Amino acid sequence: MRKMMTKEVTKTTVKIAKMEVKDGLPVATSLEDEILLGNVSQEKAQKAITKKHGSNVTVFETTPTTDVYEMSVEEFIKNANVKLVAIEETLKTS
Image 1: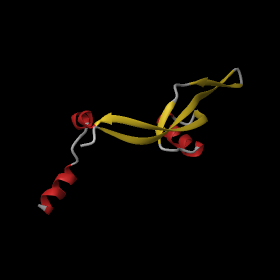
Image 2: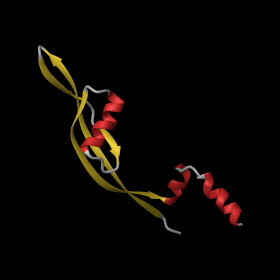
Image 3: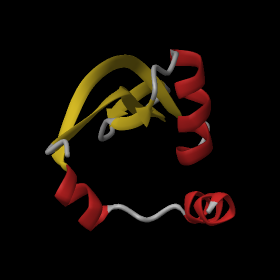
């Protein structure tokens, strides 16, 4: 049995700022970066951020990265949820 399992995951770090008007001038206040799963374009990131934070938050940068995660199979079994569909299919074919 294989002792380690790996999974490649792409995520996009989104730099955002809250836009406000102070003394008649626009001011951007940086907010904590958001992480979105997948390789997300700036337009899709803006839609997701607007939905979460409101229309006064703007996306300034999106940076996609792909990392390979590794975990022992034993640890995976301890932490993972068993998918019931797979169990039902196994029972049907038995």
